[in-house]
Length: 189
Image (cartoon, rainbow, N blue to C red; front, side, top):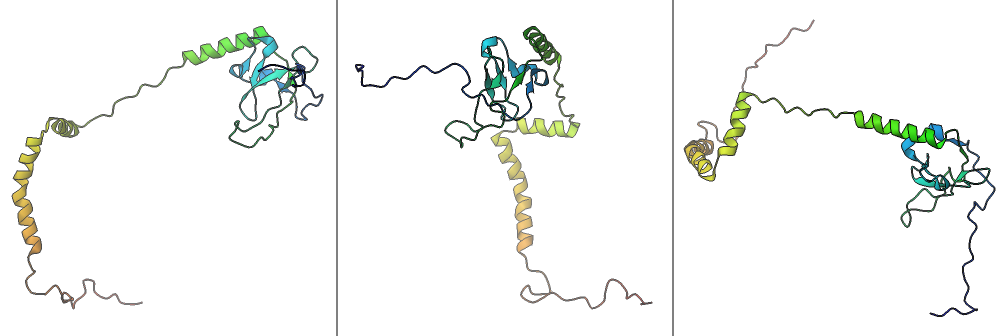
């Protein structure tokens, strides 16, 4: 595609914050943030985690008098409504130097690496449980068929007894009601 004088071209945008406005919220102090939530490896492209929406946000105005968080939205792109974060244009107070930040980050890494996870102890088994578990592992299809064959006679006898009619009362009629009570009447006082 050829470029003609009639086609508009994008104008280079200024590399500074366009608005003089700042958030009415108090300035965000770097010393109040976790060292792992600040990235000052490239000081002119500083980035930190927004307190409100927990996203990484660049800091603008690094070479000017006032440094602020870039205006940003809370929701994810193309998923949620574009709602401006309350910390947009929030001023940053530099109460920590880059060497201090590096030292704090190194201390945090050292502390985190020295932590030890707890050892997961196996559950204590009783001898009976251990025997049961070993028997389950050792069972085969032939062993299960043999066990079922051994129990089959008792199952058949139980089913036969269950189908038998009780002597005396007929199931369609109600069973005989006892005429005497189990508990004698209590005298009322």
